[in-house]
Amino acid sequence: MEWNMPSLQKSKIEKHYAKILWTFIGFTVVLVSFILYFSFSKTVITLMPRAEDIALDFALPVENAEVTKNPPSDTRFDGIFLTTTVSGEETSTDVTELDDFSEKATGTVKIINRYSKSQPLVATTRLLSDEGALYRTAGTVTVPSGGEVTVDIIADQPGASQIVGPTHFTIVALWAGIQDQIYAESSVPTSQTGRRSTVATGADIRSAQDDLLRDLKVKAADELARDASLLYPHLDFFQDILQTDVISETADVSPDDQVTAFTTSAEIRVTALVTSRERLESRVLEMLQVALPENMKLAGDQSPTFDFHLENVDPLAQTGTLAGTASAKMVLTLNHPTLERKNVLNLDAQQVRTYFGNFPEIAAVDVHFSPFWIRRTPSLIDHVEIILAQPKISQ
Image (cartoon, rainbow, N blue to C red):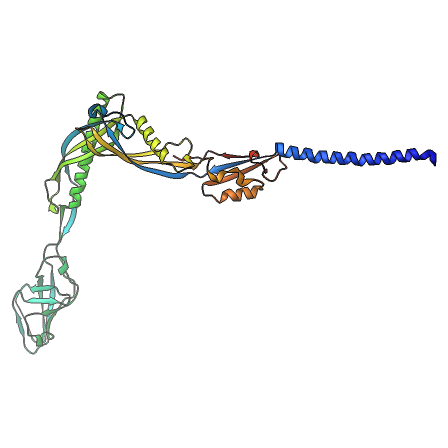
């Protein structure tokens, strides 16, 4: 037994150190895992921002610096105003067709006598219909007692309002006590003989004048475009930005005159702007950038839309105002409080999507964990990356 003691002790020692070794190895593995996790774990969150509309109404003073002699200013824009006066006349056949029922309505009635005596009725005897239309007999008749006589009638007043259907007529001149015994009846409606006519209504005249003004404006714009190309070939002529002042406009008819054609005439003064389109749009774009809400930017490589018009132009002084609206799409920037990384630490993918889904500025969310077995965002801010994708903007 004494001979085996060293071997037994050696075995116990080996087992003791083996436990220590495996404990150390286990601790090392855990430590390395933590080191690897904190060193290589990363989450990339890609956000698709939702583009929102922004519109800026502006009024930009414009002047010809060579004329005004004013020094350059950030509050004014340099431009040149060209003006021309044109006149002309046009004949229009766009008139309104009418059925003229100005004639008096006519018809035929039976005069019925249920009285004990015959009743003579002279021509133009008044007959009042139950509808209130007054007619007169066309001839003299005598209606025998217990009999009836047919007679033509004509309305007392012209117009379609006097037409009545089959109805009962009271003979106005008779004593009221026998009006229910001697009366007239019609079996068919009265009628008018109409004729077709054409008139120039107020709307017809206004439409013709508008057509003439539009044609004169095109003529003036063509003249100004030629002048601009000769005088200022290095600048842009804004054919879509014109100020039109009507000097006079007349028509040779009055509203509702019966005509088949009529003539309108007008004289207008048209003013146009000549300047650099690139510099102008760049200037308005700068104004739009300034108007953006905090932590917002213009979306993508879009081309904002501009709607310009001239106001208060004085061609002689070469001053005026370019007013209008600039419209574009905007999205949030990475500086937006919504996108702070501390808000999405130690969350799983669904929690990340839920968080960003609470904000209308975000259209879609994609979450990518690394390494692949990681299922939550890191607890360290530096290991979370948020990327804003480029939204597609339809022009």
